[in-house]
Length: 178
Image (cartoon, rainbow, N blue to C red; front, side, top):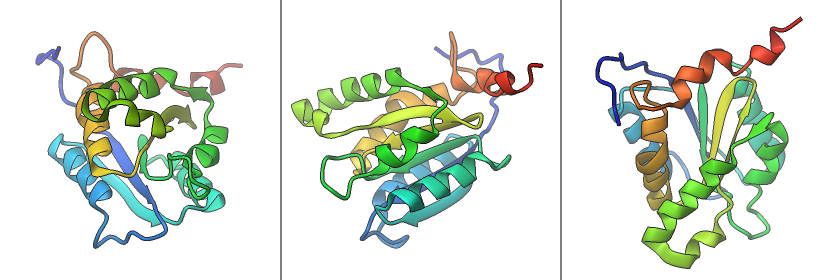
């Protein structure tokens, strides 16, 4: 449900593709996210591609979460079970708070489209340094499902009864207490 009396508040979103083979010329998942982000009225803060390397993934996302110009980080790729799939391992140590519901809702949406194959994804989400982080599978379909089914509404201040944008100012309140 949307409350049209509330203003739209654009947020700054960084997109990271995790892949050993993709480039900006053939990154369909990153392109899918960027298109949806900008169509919704949000701002693309950064876009990058890094190899399936824990340190590179961690450092890129950590740096973005420390930047005041980034409110949300969305990664795509590296959530499977092969040896090179290390995105959750790289980013979960950053999480101050896990968002278990994100994974559960993502799998529910995905199940309707790909059935039991959804269990091959370790999509996850959390908060670090007052920045939301969403870890998505590397397929364009999974990126569409996550954006269209969860993130588009939750990153819209007008979405009721609650949304991520309205609590952004309080994500770091634990740091402000004496």
